[in-house]
Length: 187
Image (cartoon, rainbow, N blue to C red; front, side):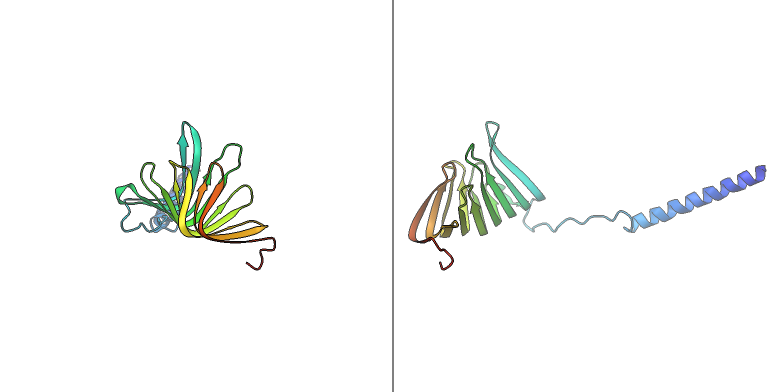
């Protein structure tokens, strides 16, 4: 009877060693728990981040939040971001949302510039489209010298150049202003 117990213990020990060796071999070859490969890093980047969220505050209150798919921190404190969403917080007035394909954040309180497929949506239903915009935090203004299109269900206006006071949600279209009221399907 004692012989059977020693024999069973030896068989169990051999099975455990075999399982341990198989698991270790599979793990070392990446079959179990494969290593994740990070996204390629920009050649000139000192630091690359994925899926970031950055909130700018003043006296503990959020001013705006930036979300981006990726951010490359390069020389001179400049950060290049991809697939951006910025939400400007406005107390009791609703938030303004900006999206763009690319952007650049300057150090400290420098401007935030965005480009390529730039869209700004206001709580009152206005939508602005352009190829480039710059946000200056000190003045709380969005600005561009590029062609813009501002639209709602009731009108479409195009112009070359624009300034928007984010706090008041007021627009100033700079030149070559053209618009259509009512049926905007033919504009």
